[in-house]
Image 1 (cartoon, helix red, strand yellow):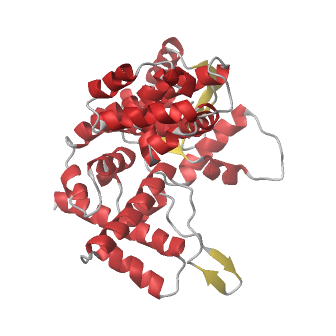
Image 2: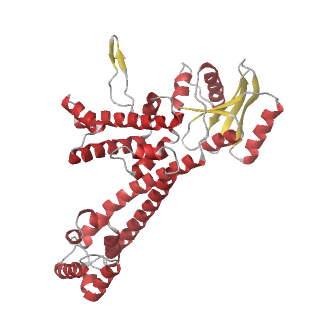
Image 3: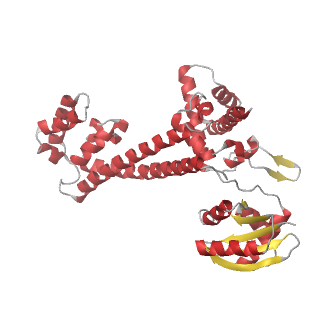
Length: 393
């Protein structure tokens, strides 16, 4: 006989009930907190029943189900974390009553009528890599907003800086350090040339003599939107320091991620694909985890949200609809950029590459650039899956 502990998860607390495959309720639905004491008390209640083959089922609720999942995995239970859409479709009925107790009973019924894949606790290596990957994306997204604010403040305080630090150089360490110290032309005008030269010389910047002379000349003729003692100038100095610190933190995360990735068996085969560098390889491994957990390419494609949507109306079936986008958005993002990068590098080097050939084939079929790139992204994912699976052969 099989038993299932159905848990309806909420923030900091849950509702749980233990039911047998015959429908017998062994533990009535009751509420418990996500604390050591309540978890241990629940475990004692289960052990007192002297039953075996107890599984645990719950819905994926973002981060709220993680403590419950961790506890039962560490205590060697079979844990099933399901997509809330499954349970929602199962609970659809004419009655609109919804309670935590009914949700528990519905989850138990769902467990005995459907087949789900149990959760396998990943190794600490992949958990740490995933944490670093999400930290990288969080820092990168916040840095984009900071850079937009920085460019606006720069235009108000000293717009000519963009002529001195051209393009992306305005975000370089030396530019950010200099602008945080000298955010306004009047401050530069009051500073002796030798002090400005000392700054660039200390940073080992090439052409520091001509650069400081140019900055001094432009500062003497510049007329910005604000005075040097305005709060906007202080804001520019502050945000330049924050961006510099953010970029240093991103570089530290990148270095850690690459070092972790080199400890996995998948680093060398993925990195061997032309156009995928060390950091991209590390991000891919961090987001996919142990690729052996995917039985086939269809599961991996669905995990990345690259599987096509299927629509049927009568006898008409469209199996080539747009991608579902219901999977890992970070993985989709990095694969899309990687596919574009491979196509660009191959076009410049004029060397044959199966990814670039596939892209050109789709373009010659009349596909739009983005449609062809999405198809190429799926092709790249299949190649990554193939080279990783060859390790175990």
